Length: 251
Length: 251
DNA sequence: CGTACGCTTGATACCTTTCAAGATAGGTGG
DNA sequence: CCACCTATCTTGAAAGGTATCAAGCGTACG
Image (tube, rainbow over all chains, first blue to last red; front, side, top):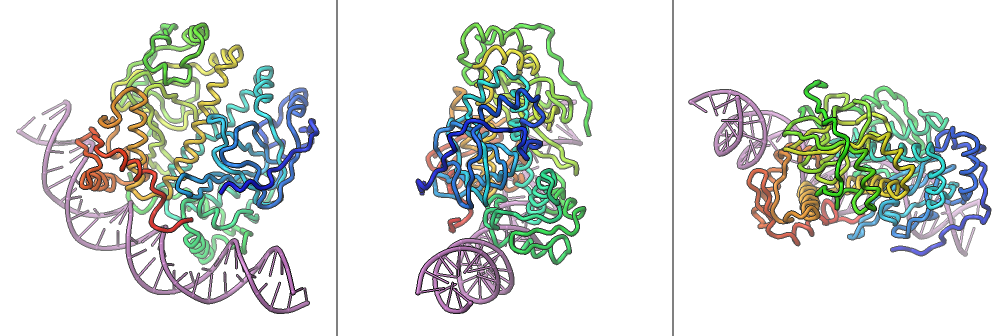
């Protein structure tokens, strides 16, 4: 169950040039004053490269570091007591991994690479220490954590009352937006995760996701070819994603 | 929509004796050294008293403070663009309100009292400033925030794949545990929120919640009388709450 | 005393899961 | 380079769980 496979090692090197990081505009450290960026660079351990399927974190291992995605994408999966497999998050470049581990002191799920990806390691103790001297860093970090609380809280409550059609639209619009902010086309992108992971993440089955995609295609909303998504009618897809609930009634 | 009703005012008084607070063992500030507790007391504005239905926070208003529940309970509700009413959280004594507002700088939902309740106000700017001098306070706060991220992330993903029977069991077990930690009986308690709010929170309808409670009663799991809950067979209820998923199949 | 709100109960429709094969595609080894 | 294997995606038919719609019922409070 907890296959103790190759857990990656970071290079011993102890300096990163954050100022040259392509993810920096998205990273919560982005646009910090130069001096402080440099200090961060002293802390951050750079550039583990992961291949598809490589684990970055094993569920239950002690929390030591946050990880910042520089390129590629990863998923977080939690296995519950009854051997249930739950996809709890996807991480794209510029996003922070491990925010949910600080509280318990252990990582609540395994994090696995969905494709070739690179990450930076941010040892938490040293990060906290740096925070003592850089209030702005603290503020950014709190902001980041808080946004996470809010979006999980609201996003999930929303999904709970939604049909498959709306859930998937919501997911695709969100992904599209995430790609757009990374400088990619919001209309054509490649979803690195398999259908099964999407279904699991949305609380649906693979079959339902598949059928829903077919319906979208029939309605001229979008087309998919394997992992490739091509959105044809974004306005309508967005309207669908925002659609209130199940059927008629208002609560 | 945003009924500008009586928004409560705090007394001008500027000192709170945290050390005498009954919620202190549950509050994230609990068990801090005495000096620091005292400093907190200088910041915290005490004791607004709310009656059932009184709003503490109006959705969209600028974020200025966190609130700590001293007694009673409250709910957070978010109204979406399409006038959909979503219950996104319940707060019991010792819990922090407003964690999800830090990021956006606005409160993402209204917070309304479910019964007579008292809260302390914790102005955020001053709290941050105090954090500069008290690293332990920062750590506690981060821990608190992180736990929130984790439980929302996992808890919700779980609910998404659950039947009404399991969702409600999960909710009742969680509430029972929260009461237990507050020194009340975990077997007999009073849920201050109406059925409709529970249903909404769990992504169900009132009818389904009602019918499910009847089924529990028929099975000898628990009985309800209005807001009163009396759990008869906790082990079985817990097993039900942990039950894996919809029907047979494993993911 | 009545009105309102919350809770119950019943019948029906519908979405999604479940079960079961089949079709594709990517990767491996002969 | 092709055959095979496995994981992934597709399609179909049936069952099941909830939402929906519609009344009743109780109870609290003005």
